Amino acid sequence: MTRTVEEIDYPKTVEEYWLLVDYYADNLQELIAQFHPFYKQAHYDMPITALRAERICEIIREQIAEIEPQDDPQVRFRKYKKERNPEIVNLLNETWFGVPESSYVHSRNSFYTLCDLCSEGYLVQLDCEEDE
Image 1 (tube, rainbow, N blue to C red):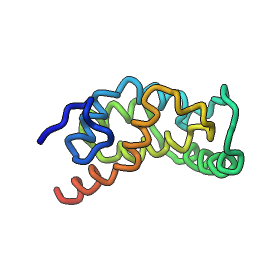
Image 2 (image 1 turned 120 degrees about the vertical axis):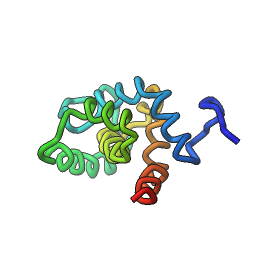
Image 3 (image 1 turned 120 degrees about the horizontal axis):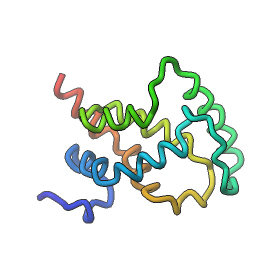
């Protein structure tokens, strides 16, 4: 049985994963622009509510930002989405690490969708391995 995007609480199949990516693409691109470590911008317009976790994420953000060569994350997102490339999972995880450890971020459009796509990324990664 195929679920509509409104019925998907989190993706359970590869098809649902890509359906969410397509449906929330604009919001996901906005989150990438705001939080991906590549941009190295200050994005703390909200108070940090988990200081220790934030300190660890800062280290990981620096490591992500130093990866060379790295194309613009928004360009990568559009490319991966179009190609149905499982590398989109890594890109979304990089973005997730860029999100400040603040409970206020939960109100951002599609924040929970980003979380679901990160946690369920194995769906597209396994699908790719099966194709090989």
